[in-house]
Figure 1: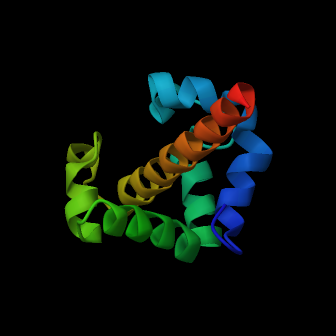
Figure 2: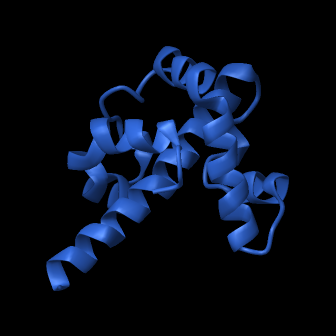
Length: 111
């Protein structure tokens, strides 16, 4: 886990049981606490710095900048206003964290 990243901790606390489904089917299938614009808007408001840091770190790891990474995401075409942007970046960060958790679970199962 990224040091002091409260959003990553929120995902671990609230979505750990859904990690397999998020990784294999996508976050847009509907999961507790991240289904509606209202929910993702509240998460963005509370954790926006952590969310942007997660995305920026992912972009850097891929040799990209943040805006390039965001423009290449699966749901980038759906961003048309503030609510859809907040939803998009929350979901994008959740998918990144879900992949981390999934990899940790796989490593633990193979150890």
